[in-house]
Length: 180
Image 1 (tube, rainbow, N blue to C red):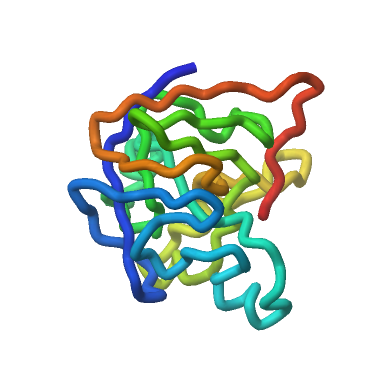
Image 2: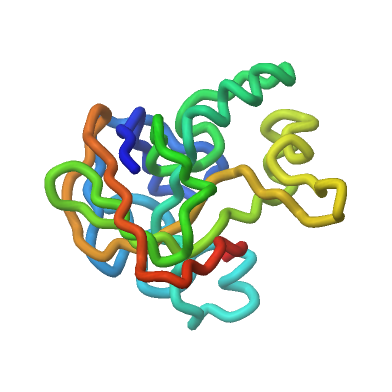
């Protein structure tokens, strides 16, 4: 399963969106250099308030560009970085990956997939009605989360738009993604 990097983003401030850059650097065990979520322990404000010593399983946020096309069909215009992701991919089914998948990105970087992003109400502050497009219940009542996946940096390296993304699945049995 292969794809490409469509955009890379980071923001040193705790703001909803992240500006695009020509490249970002992943630091092993920490996250994206220069990003507000960099660190061994949690950096998301709500999680820090609960327990600041929790491990940071959300060092890197990835979203598939195909989501933006889906959102456009519902009247929402979204560009890479606007939903707070660090890496926008194309051509790879991020949401279908099992937990523990290793994403080899570019020449050296490796991100281990830890789970699904759980979008919050800030997404509706960005664009009203967007939350129900990226997190809703199916006919059986199961919550469907489409706002991307989270991961930790296993191996650092620079990443640029156009870089290849290659998924290496873990040994079976595969564990489905859950919110982190």
